Length: 285
Length: 258
Image (cartoon, rainbow over all chains, first blue to last red; front, side):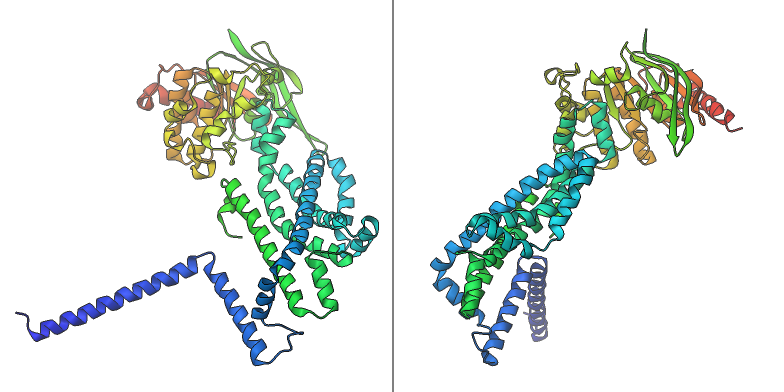
């Protein structure tokens, strides 16, 4: 038989153990939260939206000035059939421009990495195109190429071009001297040195530029649509600004933000898959 | 029969109007299948001499012939397996893929064809890297990377291996272990090796011939034949003759200090 005292200590012990178990669970949850990639930013977003919603409701803000996020989401989901075709147009212009700009930049990069003279001749032109505000060129492109997709594609391509060019020149050039000497000891041709050494060496540089450029290209498409268009999310923003349809404006902004996040993450995903050998591919953005 | 013949070779470097004499009147002859070490103080031009033989640096005077070919001609024929100071493994390739590089470039050169090659996995196993065949370079230690570099050179089918201080970046213990592995792998392949080193121990342990060089200008001060029996193993370092050779070389190196 156990005494009452023993009985009591056992109960206390059990309670302590239970408490410890709960503590451990809490610690585990905390750890899981802080180590997770998605949870902390998701929590921050939710907090931001709650704050926004609360501010709009409590301060009685005029929905023309600032609609509540729930109202925006309601508008977006309710009229998704209206927004999607426009989003598709913008995405199409941005991606086409992105790929065009990338292709031209890498081709130019190959030539310019090859010859210092070519670089000295062409780089100032590229820099000139880069420092000229794209907003200033956009109306000109509309004048030249009309209201269709073409001027938007070209603007997106121009925005993409410069960072891609600089990074591809750097990537093709910045090879390890030891690697080059090793290739020379095998009497590798210039073409072999390019495909087996310079090109793989440039991939981390190209991807880092592509990550920035893919969202820049969306900006380019929108800027093009502002200057003159009949469709696209940029067009919606322009029109809704004229008619003070703030909810509609915010819906288009939301879609653009989501588009940017998705595109950047797709590039990031391909980068991680392709460049597992590279040090930086293991780190976060 | 002479395989590598270096005749009256001189090399100058011109920098900011100043001319430095890197090598002066080098005369050397090596037979096929010999392991030759080039030893000397920094700046004696031993790495330059290695690069001249490999056709990576041109010469200002004299002549180099490798089996009747010029260095560049021999390079075109893929006669060289180069092992630089840093292992020069491509980080985007696995160990096995790095072993393939010599067969993927300059395929017109009359080097060994892919079908005739020695099994690269077996080669890697022989240097203790059997478990790392599919690893990337960044997953290997410096010593392991250098062993891949050596295995790649031996597996490339090239008759002449040029090694430029391959162990200099490694710690003493790793160095000692790899030098025995190099001894073993050389024993089973018997290639002609030019091995640049700062280490007297490595030079005597590995070589048939040690070329002692002096600096400013780079000159050959002595060529010493190492008459130690082969195959050599770790116990050779207990041999009295082994230490005799080391002190002899040290003597020649010191002579030049005065």
